[in-house]
Image (tube, rainbow, N blue to C red):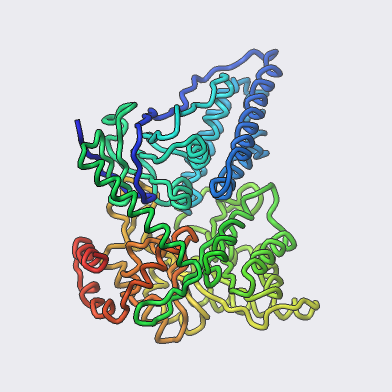
Length: 572
């Protein structure tokens, strides 16, 4: 019988295939101990399973080809880092050697400990790595019991699951999976980001999917409209074929825009920067004609290894980014994480009760000036090879920006005195992601050289909704009158001070919201390279003068429904 299930489109696209339903995996392990004389054998059993898991990930990395290898490689390497984490390995060995726990229960204890750490993280992007943790731990557990890796039958399967980890997603795609439907999940998870990069249709939050869809059911995944159609009829199939043809035509048209300007129909140039955190992102940004890097995240440098990255390591990384952009500006954001994530190799203020509102971003940098100065020195040295901009996260007060500018100026002078050829004056920008900073933005706009609105955090704080809590998905939305009013206010103040304002949050890369941002007055976007051509196409198809005439109606919308009606009318 035909029926439909609504979901949230984490990655748009169309797919027709067979359902492969996977029940939720729960690591259920009894608390068991081993005899003292069995410790050596149990340690050997654990390390054999770890080695098998490493080999499994390595083989997957080698099997991936083309775009899949480029996009998924980073996520697989994150799993490799977890499997080689000295603290994890040490804790597992200690649980077996000293507590005489079985390898299974030692693994369960460490999984629970790490889950607690991940759940306390305030950064949704890093917090979402919990799915990857579960997947890696699950693979180790499977190898402890010599379970073979589950393999889907053939190309054409659509995975239906509670959730999916990023490295698993890469493996499934290599086996021919064409779409994924999950009952839970977040738009900011690694899996969602990877799926968008690869243009793999992904529906999340599809309530009832596991219970109502059965193995072998024919499915249409319409991730453009957030819908799964189970056992489609003839008319569904005809519509699906027509959409596939239209999508193929649209992709061919988009490819022609690689070298075209991001200019509206009535002649206004819009700047498209790229968000980046990997070499692949930077290479794609360059190839797609990005105006530069609008946001380079430096956090992953600080999450690798046992020691904080020193000046030389950071300098080499930042210099390579600058050289890769070949004269286009590279905007490097200083460390944007809380001290809770530097517990192994850096400052740790203790167990913060609410790390989302704790010592993070600029607060952490200011509290630990040696870490901040080292990063600034590396960034400034890299500026000798091309234009660099410095972006400060989590600014909430004017005093923070003033202090950072003095520090930047002082270190620049020191480096010049040491003989380094550095940029004369590095533009210093501020993230606008704290509601107080957005409301009182006039106190920042006169001293910042540019501003970048981080809508992910701004919306979270403004609406008091955890952006990774799927139960709040319907509350966490940019389509709220308060959000639009605040965005308009920041953009307007920026223009009054002749300071560039960009949006670098997820909404900047959502083609469905491109015209909304243009109507609010935005002329600079910073987005994932994978969405750049679609956003450019909408910009080129837009008459900005005509759109601006509707801005007042947008701003007078009283609720989400009113904003959605405006969007529907504008986007057609």
